[in-house]
Length: 221
Ligand SMILES: C[S@@+](CC[C@H](N)C(=O)[O-])C[C@H]1O[C@@H](n2cnc3c(N)ncnc32)[C@H](O)[C@@H]1O
Image 1: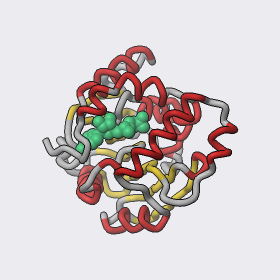
Image 2: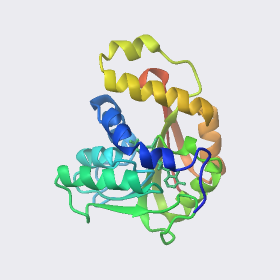
Image 3: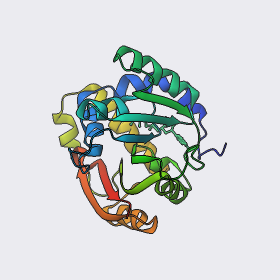
Image 4: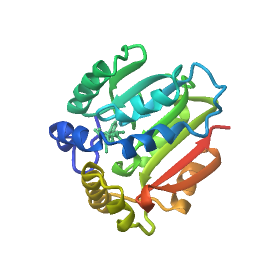
């Protein structure tokens, strides 16, 4: 399996801490909004959540989309163990959220298999993120949807973060800001560019979380 800069050990060893700090309502509410561009009448969605981590992203999307089914893919076994615990606590079955160990650069899925591909705080970690986007395109059915929420390269509002009065959010966003400085952040332009280069259309971006995050949403032709 290919590794990203920094290795998977950090996410393996730190899964419990990541789970603790990101299990906050504001972070999870943004996860839920990843599928905001998918029409509500689209029933029985099959969603692939890349870098599912401790599962919060898929579980939050599933609360907003009660008939959707998810495949949660991650390279770190520690994260998948945390996701399995959270799936159990949420009363979800393995059919509703299938957890899969794998590398997003070589997806273990057939072509045109899923209706949507999502990634929450994921793309920025990958040195070869264009390859991950091209893999996402490959496994999407024509007309399918893609969405990422990534660290934003533009101006951020620390007063906004303070005003949320959440120590968990403060820790997760401060670490996110630091860690993304070592890896990558996306501007609206760079987010649009990479989605377009991967062959997606109907691209939109939205700055969120007080400027700390940016959504990129698009569709496969
Ligand atoms: C910052 S966490 C995000 C977790 C979750 N989506 C969330 O927002 O709470 C990024 C996740 O991506 C996973 N990851 C990194 N590189 C990967 C790769 N090449 N393939 C699959 N997962 C990967 C890490 O193990 C980690 O769990």
